[in-house]
Image 1 (cartoon, rainbow, N blue to C red):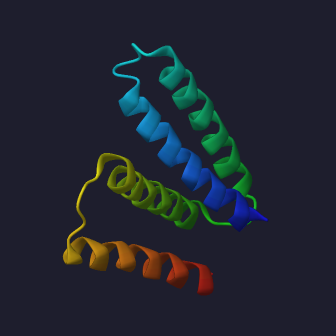
Image 2: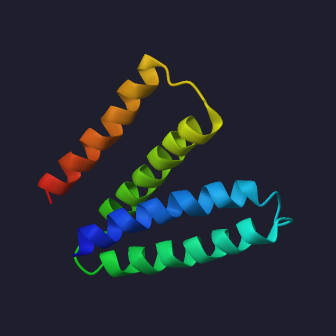
Amino acid sequence: MSWVYLIIAGFFEAIWLVSLEKSESFSKLPFTLLAVLSMAISLFLFALSLAKIPLATAYLIWLSIGVSSVFLINFITEGSTISPMQLVFLSLIFIGILGLKTTQ
């Protein structure tokens, strides 16, 4: 169950970061509230995941999921382009996550 908590926490981290940007320095209340709520949920689930996953591994995976998700959210919502090299490096992040999970 710890891995499920960690994966969901990573997605809430992405929501937190995107909402933080959209809040425009906390001037837009709905995005500010979403940022605070998603941050709290992300940190809570991250803490639960630490019951069975070492801190260094959990933190790396949490950040990787968050960064990758923000990248993909911006691609979908902002119409950003993804270069072939960016796809290669995103793939390496996921390969690293799988490697960490299988060698734990």
